[in-house]
Amino acid sequence: MPWNPSQYHQFQQDRFAPFEDLFALIKVREGLRIVDLGCGTGELTGRLADRLPQSAVLGIDSSAEMLQRAREQEHEGLRFQLGSIQEVEGNWDLVFSHAAIHWIDDHRSLVPRLLSLVSPNGQLAVQLPSNHTHPTHKLIIDIAGEEPFRSALKGWNRPSPVLEINEYAELLHANGATEITVFEKVYPSLLENSDAMAEWTKGSTLVPYFERLPENLHEPFMARYRERLRSLFSDASVLYTFRRTLFAASR
Ligand SMILES: C[S@@+](CC[C@H](N)C(=O)[O-])C[C@H]1O[C@@H](n2cnc3c(N)ncnc32)[C@H](O)[C@@H]1O
Image 1 (cartoon, rainbow, N blue to C red):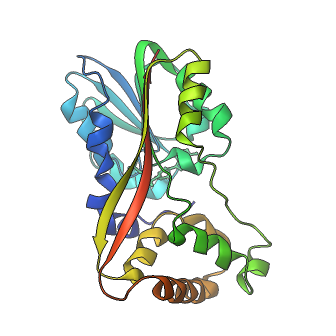
Image 2 (image 1 turned 30 degrees about the vertical axis):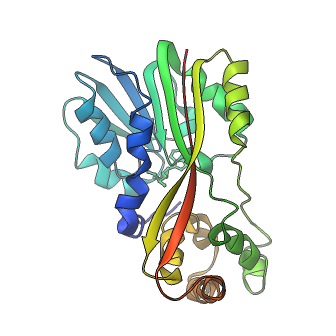
């Protein structure tokens, strides 16, 4: 998918806010072998390397655009590699993922697979957006189903694969995990107006839609999206209440 790191980082501080909650779930030990799945531009991968003593951290991402930025930060103990999350192999002391696995379908098979990458006494720590019931996300599905976008997309749409939080706990338990923590949290961001919400999802949720839509329909899509958001939210500052699921477990 053609990610645009600059668009994504317009809201960098807000997007990085869950990192601290996720990091708090990690059992810090020396010399951890860590993989960061869907590392993007690598800043959080770098934070892991900085905060976990003597660790060897590998960031994996399928976007060449995102990885190009990540690679600028490489140093001993911090490496990046182009690849897909589904194809990662090996045994890791910490399998980490921040805002990435919601791009992959079928979490009932994905979560056991991620857990299988964790070495004995190791940990899995994941954060994923679960904001799919918010109007910013529901409107994308609605508008993609309207003309002229529907025909241009050949009816394609992307329903969320994200499960209820109890299902993540059940999946982890059923696959042998211990010390299971799962919670959902709202991360509120005060934005200038509802147009800013549209800019936010343009850098993330909308990426696969714009990959499939011809360029001459990008702005018309955004115009309709902004108009619908304006009808729901005030044109003064808006509180964007962004839901995220966090889970961690040991093996
Ligand atoms: C929203 S960004 C998050 C990046 C980073 N972890 C962060 O929190 O800033 C999601 C990243 O997941 C990557 N991604 C999505 N699906 C992937 C897959 N199947 N395999 C590898 N990377 C994937 C995208 O390329 C993108 O860089």
